View 1: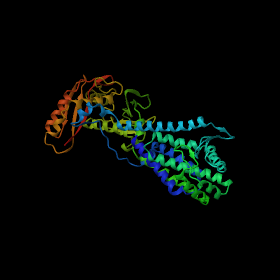
View 2: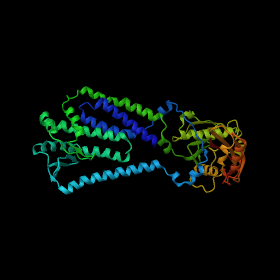
View 3: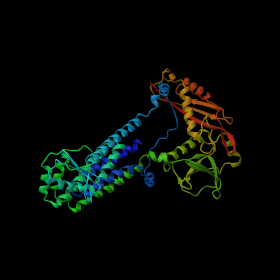
View 4: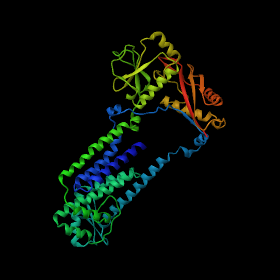
Length: 502
């Protein structure tokens, strides 16, 4: 999510930069209005776009992180302190959102209160609200608020100006950015956009009204008095001191030549580069939305596959006759598929299994793991492998940690991590004279057919740490064993443990 927010802000900054440098000085006010509205919305969509052909054309550097346990002397304290489990960024986000929502409601109530307090006069296409003892002038939808302190001879031109805002629905633009301020109050570009769109609104109204009167007179009326300004960001204000100078400059500016509309074509390379960027970067949303499905196991491509109980990102082919679909490389896989691929590869290599495999395009947008078992006696050798050690990607039902329900694999990982954190003596790391820095321990073990932990091995930077790792693994509870083809089988695991030596 953080990556998504950063990309949204970056894209909005680029869009505003193009506007400020190339478009803001031109008199294409209506086009500029739609540029600001559309780019503000597009910036939220672009980070979600992924073009597969671009992803495949540009190799992605990646690192696969297997589930590991991170140990530190503070770990027990962190687990014991309730406040450590609070995500303070989430709390800050929702507090900010609540605050800005309350401010918005208060401002909205101020406008509604003015309407009920002073009443409104219904005109042909708008409603006029007179405000006594002030010189404010602003509009909100089809309500035009006019201070009685404004001289009568100027009121008509102000009404004409505010009527343009009402007719062109400028209030919707301002409310759109006001809602963005509520949900993205931390995004500075929302405030920049709101400022730019407010100024464009004034340019549009000034351009239309000044056609029916000499510009000199209109400008003199605009500058003749100092008026009060209402501090509400989603209303169109006639007298806003910070904008008057820019409005006068724009009204005295010559109309831009039509050829300069070609500047809007700058959007094409800008959008193309943004799409290219998002397609080549890791997309968190894609990772979240890529879901596991029940694994299909093919033995004959002309027949219906069997459905394994366990879910996975890829299917399996055990036919031994080869497959005609396109063979893929690891760079063609998604990150989740790569994890599954490397997990299977590592387990086969660690067990010196005779099985080897390739990845092919499968069916229904699923990739398929094709095992090369032509040279193996399928009846004898594969049964031998299954009875002794089953590759994790093939096993129909993985071992289950006591108390796990639902996603057994995810629960298994969490339970193992919690068990190691609670049982590993973290003080050993800093008492053995090891060089400072990050260290790792690798623990290998198998879950036997009866669920007991067997064949425990460990590799560590010190013999005492090795003994401690084996001790912890020996204390693991009895599991519910894994099953394949209705038979209970052994399943092996490699557990990495990471710690820092001070």
